[in-house]
Length: 88
Image (cartoon, rainbow, N blue to C red; front, side, top):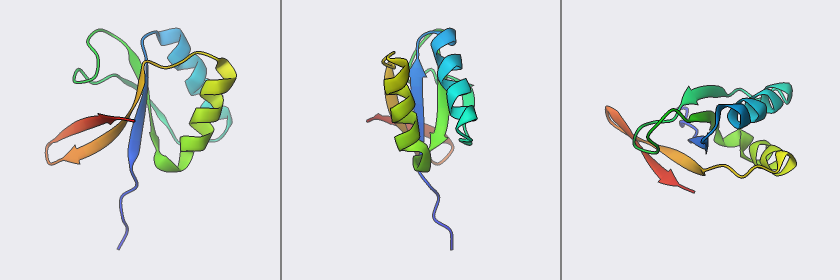
């Protein structure tokens, strides 16, 4: 039986910064997604990068390299039909 791996979102208020981090992570062969930030986290048109826990160290290292702090990082908590988010 396979246990689902935790998923996370790293949130940036601007498209440029989110896209920069996304491109750097793709070059590191990370399986990630560039998604609109859920309304439960942020109003407006911010972008987030969705990734699995296995990539946490790579994501954190790349955030340090670009020296642009994200608005936040959130764990996705599956709750039936809707997802909840816990800030980490």
